[in-house]
Picture 1: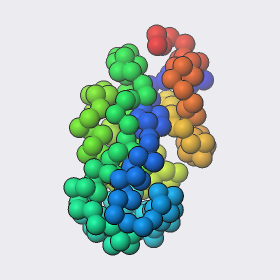
Picture 2 (picture 1 turned 135 degrees about the vertical axis):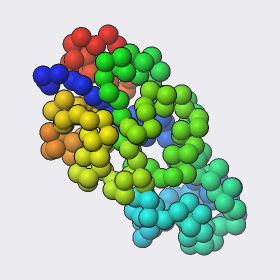
Picture 3 (picture 1 turned 120 degrees about the horizontal axis):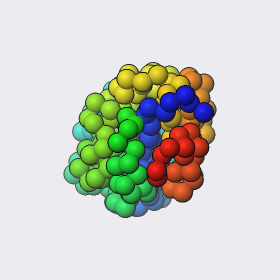
Length: 208
């Protein structure tokens, strides 16, 4: 247990926002003779995928690169809209969680994500009001992605806390383990009730 829990860092995808990749792939597949499964495989194995996630390729260039590779007729606006359909509009956590935590904890976001998703997320989800802009750490902005220590150090610097005073929440075990290896406390997210219970274990004074 930390001597004093001063900060909580949250992943976004599958922790704060549901992801529906199939819905996005259905839009991306329009007009091309590839199945959604084939499109997803092509995206995951694309040689520029990490460049896209780490901000070394701009949105319009990513659109051109991927649509040319897939033979897709989608315009940039059509591509952007399909790309964002993976982000379910119904959040996984209620704002009261962040309202309570923000009373005496510093809050940050730490996400492997891209500029198209960032713009959509920040425009459509109310929980961002509890996370100051300087404390939203995106792989595409810091040019490093989980599980690299670089992105975790960027988050700690953003919220001005030490690792031992901070807990990181992510659904992916590899990233949870990476955080722990750097001295952070970490919770592998499963569901909202489990998250609140695990946070109360770390700080019994939390009224969440």
